[in-house]
View 1 (cartoon, one colour):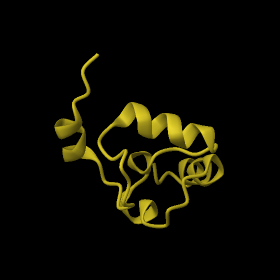
View 2 (cartoon, rainbow, N blue to C red):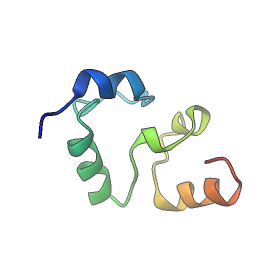
View 3 (cartoon, rainbow, N blue to C red):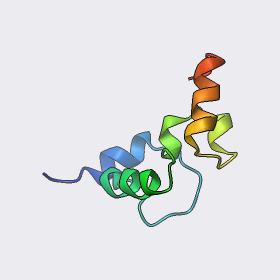
Length: 66
């Protein structure tokens, strides 16, 4: 499978400086190891908190923000 980094970067709202930006398979793998989700799963305002935890995401879902 070919990585579509340039297409991914167009949709990526992550503001954290990271070498995995745009390489979704590496990004997701890295975050899941830490029980987190990538920034692109979060709305822009919440992404900027850098809280990528499952718990924070679940709270946002309960509050209808995702």
